[in-house]
Structures are given as C-alpha cells and as structure tokens.
Image 1 (tube, rainbow, N blue to C red):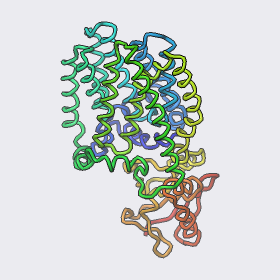
Image 2 (cartoon, rainbow, N blue to C red):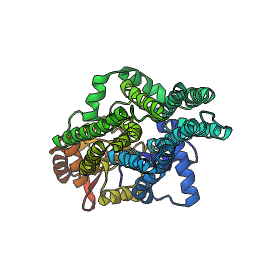
Image 3 (tube, rainbow, N blue to C red):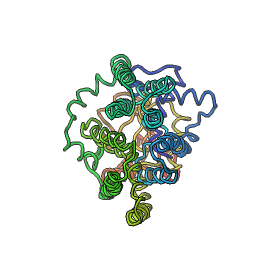
Length: 446
C-alpha cells in the first residue's frame, strides 16, 4: 500500500463522519480532492481504505495518461513520436505524486487545463472558442480548490501561453488570478495564518532548498537514504540532458509549439527557485518538467546516431527507474501486517496516543494523537512526553516496520529495540496484538 494515502484518508473520513469540512484542518482549505472522493465513495459505495489504497495509485496512472496524450497529440505531429514522449515521461517519473492525493488530482487537472489551451493555440490558431474558454475556467477553478501550488503553476502556464501569443487568454488569465486571490483570502485563511511567515522565510533560500532534498524533514538520515537520493538526482539529470539535447536539435527542426513548451519549462524552473515548498517543490517541478522533456526528447529520433543514443539511454534508465522509484519502499509503502494493525486500532479502540507504525495524520477529530519516538522519554518504565497531556491510552508499535523506518529515515538502530525492552519490563504496558510486522503494546497515561 502507498503510505501517502494514509495521510489523506483522515481528511475524507472526516467528511463521511460529519458531512462537512473541518474549519480548523488546514488541508480542508483546499478540499477539492476530499470532496470528490467523498462523493465518489457515496455513489459507488466503495469506502474501504484497502480498495482505494491498493488500487488507487495504479488507476491514477491511466487517468493521467489521458490529458498527457491529449497534450502530445496537439503538439507532436507524428503518432509514434507521441507515444515515445509518453514513454519518456513515465520512465523518467520516479516521483510518487500521481496517486490518490490532492497533488495527484491537481496534476491531472493541470494537464487537462494546458491540453485544452494548447489545442486552441495549435489547432485553432489561438482563437479559443467559448467551449474551450469554459473548460479552461472550470479546470482552473477546480485546481484552485484542490492544491495551491499547482493552481499557481496553472496560472503561470496560462501566462506562458499568452506571452508566447499562442492563445488570446487575457480574460482567462485575469479570471485565474481572481480565483486564486479570492480563494486564498476567503477559503484558505487557516493555512496562511500559520504558513505565510514560514513561506516568506523560505523564499529564494536555495541553500535550504537543496539541503532539504537530501534530508527531507529529518535532521539525520541513513547512508541508504542518501544513496537513493543521489541516484535520483543522477537519474533525473539523465532525462534533463536528453530533453536539453532534443531542444538543441529542435533549432533545426522547428515545430509550432516549441516556444510554448519551452516557456512552460521555464515557468516550472522559476517556481523551483522560489523555494516555498522546500524539497517537495524540486520533486514536483521535475515531474512537471518531464512533459517538456518528453516533447523535446523525441527530437533525438530525427537522426540515426542520436536516436541510438536515446534508445540506449532509455534502456539504461529501465533498471535505474526501478531503483529510483522503489528505493525508498521502506518509507513509501506499507506491509499488510501494518495495515491489519491499523484496522485493529480502528475496530477496537476509541482514541489515544499512536506511537510508532503507520498512523493516520490529523486524526485528532476521532480522538487519536500522533507522537514520534524521538519525542518520548522513559520515566520509571513509563513513556512520557510534552505532547502527552491527559489520561488517554498509549498504543505503542515496536514491530519490524517501525524498526525499518527508524533505520532508513534516521539511521537509528537503537530506539525501537530499547523501547521494546522498556515495554517488556514495565508493569504499565501489555502486549495485546502481534503479527509479522507489528508488536503492539497498550498502556494508560498516568
């Protein structure tokens, strides 16, 4: 199972439980994905987290394929080159962002928005029809209520198309700006009251930006994690070189869409240097830039030698893609035993502190609170923390999954075994659930 969905399940679950958005939960400041999924689950009667978590990411790849093909159909004249561009995109994409999440849905909407406007520019000579204008506005409005960063990317993409004079989009551009500003002021105040000072502090801090790509949110990382990050950078650089080489060749074989696609790439790169989202911004920018890379990369097929180089590079990229994409599997995926533990918690408990293992984020509305091992202290064989303030029970997972997470994320081989030793000696905790991945202890907070 993709761990990402465990983060967003809670936000959809809240809507199911209370039939409304949570005004305090800042993820509900951009509720597009949560509302859509809630409606989908009500209509389809598919509300099992297992079904969505197991199959959602797989199906999202096919959903995103539709706007991507639509985009390449109206920018690349040769049909076989279109499929080659799609292959470059999917092979180069090690980013785990196309899933059941706000950013996954937002990327889907963004590509449809750009594809609609590209069609107007390439096929209709820039004369956007009323239907296309309406589609663009609907896609942009959906973006604005789904994901702030991608909606800004959508606005800048519209600006790029307008600047390159491919479409007469000034009215759509103004409408997009109004949407973003209005929603930020009236719909996203919870997020910006908290995050705006942080964003301003990060702005254009390239040192922080690139350092965070290696460490993420961790202060200490394992050699394995560092090695995977270095490989991902090298792998991404390979595809950037292919795209750059194709762009150079395109100067001789010019196509109508060249300047527009180049402008879209510049927009994405500009967003990276703002530094607002730290390490995730680099990843999302790379995924978006893969679209121009696919467009220009197929130009290498125009020459026999360069086409051979392209094919060789893609063959080399196949195993590297597998390692880059799944190298962080310890933290990006969850074993079945851990999922069974989550069901045990949901079916048999009524609130408390979740320590270790897969834990739903922002689950406090159901009475659960997340505490990390790094935030714990042991006092007379009782776990305490400044974040543990009442008499709710503690659910402490010291199984194999949590051990692997601590080792991979923090290069920490001691915390989980030491915690298990304390739990076994303590009279305050009882072992109540065991499977191949989980050892769950329950104790009361004194």
